[in-house]
Length: 125
Image (cartoon, rainbow, N blue to C red; front, top):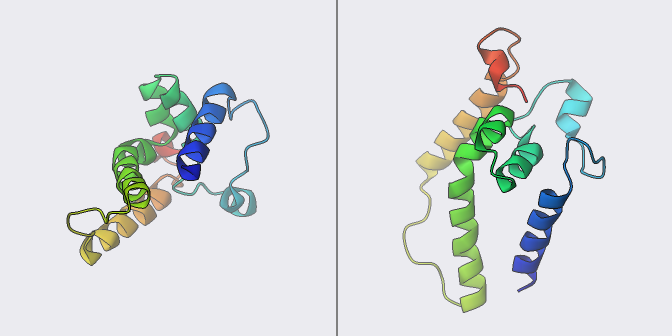
């Protein structure tokens, strides 16, 4: 139950407090130390936009996170169901090839969003 409460509290916090104007959200250490954008840069602001129904704004901030979010929520939901029901989720586990595909997509996205030439500048938050 604690995990569900923490998730709801985090969502409520993101809904109420805009990360673009409130400074208590943590900074991206990768961006602070390198000046480059990681694959997650803009995700907090994108989730805030999604919680307010602004899908296009969220896509502008971090399209990869917006596309991945339904899959992430599905995986978290399966995990929470397993924890609270005491049952293991049924179905196949993620095969190694898909983990490699995800890793390649994330690394490629990170590289592309740091190329300072149009159209790649669209990917920067």
